[in-house]
View 1 (cartoon, rainbow, N blue to C red):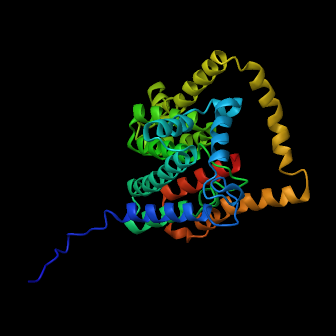
View 2 (tube, one colour):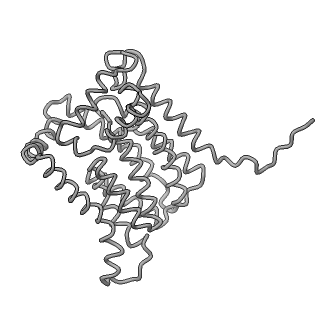
View 3 (spheres, rainbow, N blue to C red):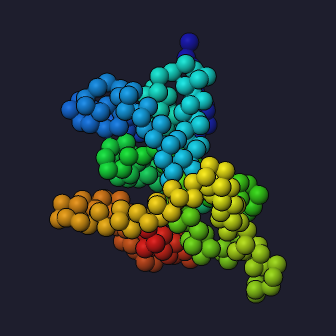
Length: 303
């Protein structure tokens, strides 16, 4: 008895999920290597439950992190609902979110007219980037980033589709997850005229459609921060934090060792993307690709 398989019975629709799973498990394995201290296996323990529990508590108690409650809420909900230890819950939540973010990267790429191969390549580049591949090693020390990535990518998908209500919700959540999402706003404003298909000119209606809707999440986040600081009586802690931010920046360059580490991390984070962005043949660049290049360079400069 022979079994005939239709030509169209497999179209690769599960490939993005499989590739995202492979990369996620690979990154998990990298963080559990023996004699390599990551957040997950500090002091070469199998799973560093004590350290990870301290990180969860730290993100609830320290002012700059307490205002980013979403990841902590997910981890604590997982602990209570599945009766898991803190370390296991931390790993489950964050690596599941990394997996989801990879799939979302594929879907966003496809939405922007990438071929399936190009979309898979984009996903591979994303997972291979320094801050994702070594997310839970010092000095990266990721915590809220995987959730932030998911909200950013879904917000960008809503942005491309001009689903403004959904965009406002998702981008606001990305800001609450981690306020560094606001660094993307200038690039989104740069893209606005090309993606809204609004009428030409700068009428009040056009400006509202093109620009005001894009920055509404920033306004909502400002309201959230004001309410959070007021409700939790964190005025003094916030002032102290703001005063110390510049000092934290200077620490990156206070010695030759720190300077080398800082410059190396910047290169490892942005260098591969610079090469992939700037070296393709100029004749192959469309107007849309040029807009992507400009947006990338603008965001990199702001960073």
